[in-house]
Length: 450
Image (cartoon, rainbow, N blue to C red; front, side):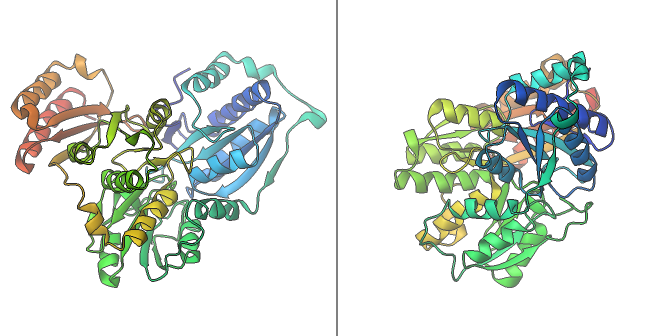
């Protein structure tokens, strides 16, 4: 059997392997079997985003889990970090999220959290794959009263709303702020407007009417044009864009200028250092983090370490380094003193808290960091052979590195969730970075382009 799990769970086009009802049934059975083997409690939480295919996968997972004698708690549409929170809060054995994050609606995915609300380890993922491929679980069939049950948790959203608000000081309100929320027609469409409204802000929500097919469709954290226009039109204080499953945040300042995940990290790191909340003065970043973020941290006497791309890798290094803050340029930010995983709403709340306490505009806060010129190109590829085996590609990379010297860097990697190769070049000028990125891209297209 092919490998199921990528860097962030299982993902693919819905109803095509591996994202089929058959696979979901098997994953549900294997996950339930492991829960019964490793824990005394026998309950698994399932949440999802707003994709049409979520119904199919939810029912298949539920059937698989129940067939192994484990109960299912169904949350309905809720952000991914909400599932992580409720899994731990309800003392469940595991939590499963049905979502393909920022991907288009045709795709879907399965992510699994442990009973403590952390992403499932690579070792457990391998166990699930082995159980399925070996057929070991096929003959394990509880019967009669041993079969599991499924029930809906009607107050799941309310529980998560309280959790998010509790990450702020009890006396803090957002009175007087005008905030535009882009909910990406995804999992935050209900909870985000409620949270910010209850905290006193004047909230204008856009892209908050999901129909199963419009999730991430020219909206959300990857497409902020509409958000930027709405912020300027309404003279709002800030715009907040979430992705389809609500674990990413990208910000638009009062002038409609996009603020990246790197800016969010810089702003929050400085604030936390000044208030002595930044343990070990340490922040975890990734190779995708802008060179300007590194320069900012150096100037602020903030330590940083680099994890491999992926929020699970960021979290692992955070735990090893004793850090409470880490994240990615894409908008995954982890506040480990508040949550076990990246949470777009929690990130937004922490940023708006700083906005209120500093009495500064977003653009002023963001001026702490100057981005180095960067060019990022995503290339659809037919296959993913090791980059070092592609002679012409490695030659183009080496030539770019020689030209940049110590004034920039090159980073080329495959996406862990899509059939895509990412080329990133940072350098002294926009022209230089664009030219070098295009040179490398051309060689990749020749070698393995789709």
